[in-house]
Image 1 (cartoon, rainbow, N blue to C red):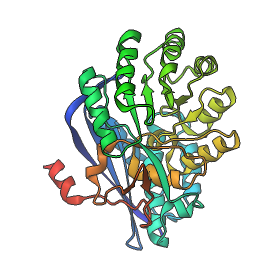
Image 2: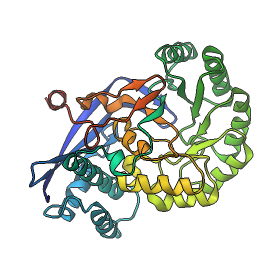
Image 3: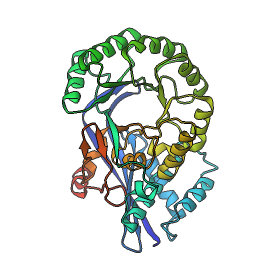
Length: 359
């Protein structure tokens, strides 16, 4: 089975209402839908995205430019594609847009392989579990008032979620008051995470982190800018609350440095930035050798297959930004999500909905 061509389609996916975090306001996404076609009639699908449709054309061009590394070649030689692509992007660098381009094609190749063999990706990768704990990450934004935060947190709990994440970034006093209000509303039995979205410096993170410890957070996420791994290691050492980070890290080399420094207690590889399925699973196994758990970042439909392949998977992040792009829906079982047994990702593009976006 050889790759015959790769097609890319940009679509604008709006949010129902803008949301706010320490990174700024988000109103929608520029998504690149990738379809890899083979001479056997099997297709592989994947998507990558930009915030607020910024630089979407650049991201699409990167995928298109990398297509010549795979068209006409064996679709099952995924490691071969990855190694050649890694060498190909050397001049541009091994972070950022080039890695996102590799991720897009890598994921489409794995989806095609799963469909060709009739197996879900998690089974192709060894299979560790067929259900994964989940936390709700699609709310509790900085743009919510405290009263709105409380109401939303209570609604998530009423839906059956036993874990959820809120955002920080309004200053220590306001952040602590908002966390206190949410914790009091949901009680001690619900796991609560808090994400600073890289908005603090080292001293601020330690001071705020110590104030947060009374609320028994499951983790304190991304307190520092992604590039300050040494500072993050010092924050992690200073606090009892586990530190989660890694969504903005690239490939096994970035995560190896995080593990060496003990920068985080939970690693959070992002399918787009880490380098696709191939690198996500390498990072997961490397973390396991350090007895460090991993949790996903975004992409719940596709990340689910990777977490199902890892025995050290901790949580699936439920962020339904792109869920309407798929025909199938995530299947919940209590506070877990079932890994689909359908071939490949187990999720396929909903062309009817996508056509509406392209009108």
